[in-house]
Image (cartoon, one colour):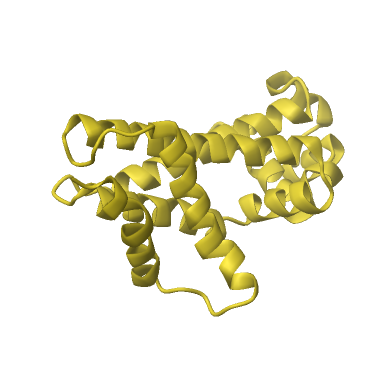
Length: 190
């Protein structure tokens, strides 16, 4: 049985980034956690940034698949938008690496952590934008600026799921769906 050293390194690095953050994770620490020599890491990855980037790319692919799995083609646009966004945001809340990186980006201002946060937001907004374009093409919603509306929908969800909870009881998914309908969908519907 062959040991997949690259997979061991990625798993160890994910654990380290999750536990210690980007800034405090070193290649020495990853090597120790993976039980490989530090040189072995460099046979697969040029540096810590490249290793981190590979992990984040996989995470973004998983998030997109999570959103795609939440969509039901028989449901209207607003319900699918809600289902996909909740799936992505729940994924983000449950995966400790994303939580740690968001905290590090916000609290320490680590550039790589901030970049990851921005990439994640861009990915989500582009995903919503694509779904809005499809909904316009299908006649489910009236013509609008897909990028601007994707941004507004995303920021509304962030505000309702994360910001609201800082000072209030968390909203139920149904309440969030109603807010989306009230503020966004009714304005875009025919």
